[in-house]
Length: 393
Ligand code: APR
Ligand code: PHB
Image (cartoon, rainbow, N blue to C red):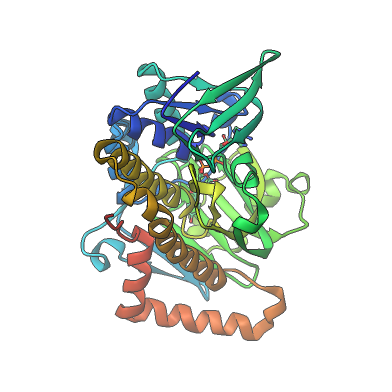
């Protein structure tokens, strides 16, 4: 098989890239290790920046996100037992975020890909990347007992943190930066109305909690737990009790509980691989960087990468120039590191760090008090939360 761009991974990065390239008339094939149903079974964050919504529109897959997504103009910060609203819209010059689950974004992208008749190979085993340091890269995989090969112009490594793309780069050519946090998020998805119209980020003596949602009838809640905690030890009742204990009296009163549809623990990590380009291999999304979920930047960063990468490929084929491809890594990493900084800062501000003791808690409370009363500080939070702008090549 021959294509222009071989895309490894059918998560949101790979599928969005495929759709943006298709809209520009660039042929692509997606190779995914798992089945489609497996990919759709992953529950992840659900806050889309305007930049992400604009890219979904450019890809022709924003209809349901626009119709069913919930526009949010603010978030609430809870600390010392009281809630304070951050007016994202007012402080960012009229921007907003859209609450719409990543699972739904993936479903919309999958359906669009099927409707366009584009090739996606699901269940591809032992995917391997070859000759991306030369002029004729190839991707090999096994399926149904046979070995298959794709010849292509470029490879897009959109295969997440555990993928084969980054792992195919020689160790001396790549620099990895990593920070692991000493806690995880225990998350529950339930068909109950959200406790509030806006997301509530809670800093409490018992640890962080987050009240989020997927719709007016489906809620997503998280509580900070020690890294070694096991999900089997958490009954639904124990989860709701712990969440309730971290809320303010009014929210505690309003909280509606119900059986969990999904319950899992996710570790928190900051990670960046530099550069993001190796000859004819380009990394995008979680393959190149991970952020802790505080602030919901993961999917938005992935979308930003893919926005830059699609533009660079389009210019390459239209202008026969490598100028944009040559700037891809640098442009992405500028935006990536700013989102890494924001996610690290918001994580550090909101969580209980056992090693920091009471002093650490007091400093967090002082910063939060400053944040909600200083226009300069809350403007900075709003500007980052709604998403920093993309640059042009
Ligand atoms: N071969 C083919 N596909 C692979 C391989 C491999 N060796 N390894 C992994 N994959 C697939 C995974 O099964 C997955 O479907 O690549 C896909 C990567 O998808 P994601 O992990 O969702 O990564 P990405 O598309 O970059 O999405 C970023 O996901 O984790 C969140 O916070 C993150 O929201 C952000 C988004
Ligand atoms: C979510 O809804 O899953 C979510 C929302 C906001 C975050 C993280 C996760 O910061």
